[in-house]
View 1: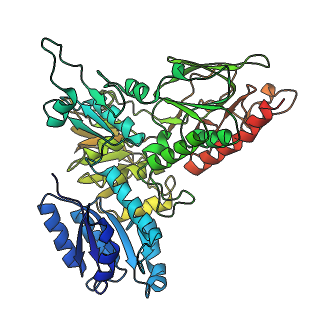
View 2: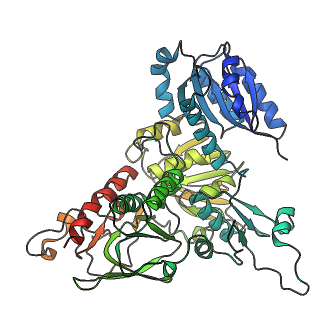
View 3: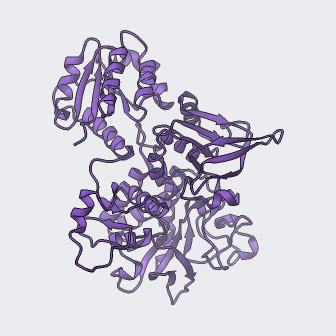
Length: 554
């Protein structure tokens, strides 16, 4: 059995107070105390040398041998993925806060809290358990798993399945068929029986899925569209389970509309792959995209929304006053009186053929949360200058030896939120290469090198890398829409006054989020002119529901 993860408490004068507060964690964590930055660093190295790791540092706001933010910086060099909290003594909480809060926005630490004054300070412990939960979701091998994957190899298919499970909030592990856990699950094979088709996926209360793919795993867990127990026609079908689609589902179902959400991949869309969103309203310590998506999904489920994941929508047959719209998938059709298109965008392809052939084998489109865990001691490159690229770089820095953010522009400030620019500048494992583009790459069955061109003078240089993460901007995902739905020259759906006048009805433009097909609406990143931010997409998802009500009204 592996050593329990450590929580290191650091205070010159109040270690007893902190130790009392963290007494409830001693059953499952190795709670250690230190009185200075240097002592805490020594404790950390001792834990790591013994095969363990540090889950969290809890430091007082003032340390005797260095500034507390410098201490976090030093400890990060020993354990890069530990969560970092300041628990200020009540005598210093207000005085020290102004000088320290800015560091939280730059990712220097995760929470600034008042040290507990007594027992059962549940507000304090709520923050502690939130951070420990985030830590547990980002370590290489989680302690508690919801799904077990059995495979002799860790290929692109296994990675895709694990990434889907991670994004659905189901922690997983991969086991070789010879592992005792796998042998216990498989049991003794019958004499003369053919060997199973790998990969196998086991989840509680579900049959084992053989020769598994993302779609078959999703169908085992959540069903197919044809499994929906829908009598007649639903009020609204939401296509896409990102922030806009989830907000639509919550507000539509809470107001009594029957609602079905169809999602081709995992709930959360691109936002669901973000390791930490720090500027979403109401979450001062930040929240991962996966947790935000799963909370929204659970909220929609409580109001009666039905979800189907892993199924791509490939067609829409517009209805009229007499017939519902038909949303077509390979797993069945959904008839709906109203349709909300919130499919979001996909990352633009790099279109460098040698690298396209290595997608899944060191080359990844998007943040690829699961792949990040496999980048330990590797040098990796993130291509892109948006918030998603910045969040991916910060997450990768917890595992990789070095992370290079590569952009064509002269800097990041034009395209990335300032809090992420500051976090990247502070992180010693991340560097930024400007005015650069990837033009070639290769490896023996897996990515080993890329070639980068300087856009200013055309010079080329080769980099040895273990991972390439491509977050290159937005391409709409709505080729399945019929010609009746107007789109701009880039393929984004036109709504409201953006619709050309020749396609208005009776001389009037469609409503703000309505398309050129009555009863079909668009929200979020798929809509032309949208802001491409999580909060903006959520707002549009909520705003579309009154328009659906108006359409459905007699």
